[in-house]
Image (cartoon, rainbow, N blue to C red):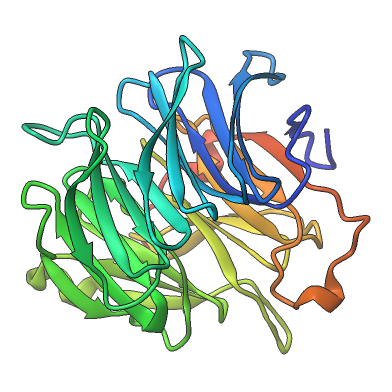
Length: 332
């Protein structure tokens, strides 16, 4: 446990965590890391974690995602390939490939023909949809730039690339963007995350700022942005944004080493947590929002000269309290 009495994940990755993903049905958590592995843990009722399986790449693992039924977990990496593990059997197979590293991946399980489909975004400036039963992509879409971040809440998918491009997709018509826009923020995009209601998304930048963006034209007057993860003249990157699956509130975490819970509708900060003074590189809520996972480790935001070999990678599980994540009444 740490100062907040959060539970530390046992046998964590040995290098910086790139992604955390919880199973939508079971108490399993996947963690991708720059140590070339995506690890799967069982999270027990008492907060303890038990390592269960591992997907290994020939380079850093950059992303992980669970299928809707929780039976499979996808992992993509710098080795330009994507693999899926069958959790019950432990069998791993390659299901995706790109010309450059796979930076982002999400299962896009939905209705109709969108079952067992994984979307992958790469630095090769393409977005590909893969049917797990086939070796070839179902669709290949060209992106304006390298893919940096993506999120899915069926039927909404949001993809953020270099040069601040954002593409919004309706997965019921997955081969063409529903909308193409520029990030409302001035600087490079680090993360996009879909609202729990599926009617918009949040975008975070390297300059300690978050944009709240609605999809429909009629809702554009509700868009706004705000500053966070700043201290005096120091400005830190927003590394992760996660939405609570029940309440629709959200977290931000940054290079400063802190995380906060926010309510976008009342435009209030719900809870500010102590600063760990080690960058937080990835976060995720579990299926019902009772657990908030966050990873500490160097994020390279200050270059190699600030890489401290003694800074160990840690992942913690925070038991959320209702008063910290429930929406507040709007200020009058």
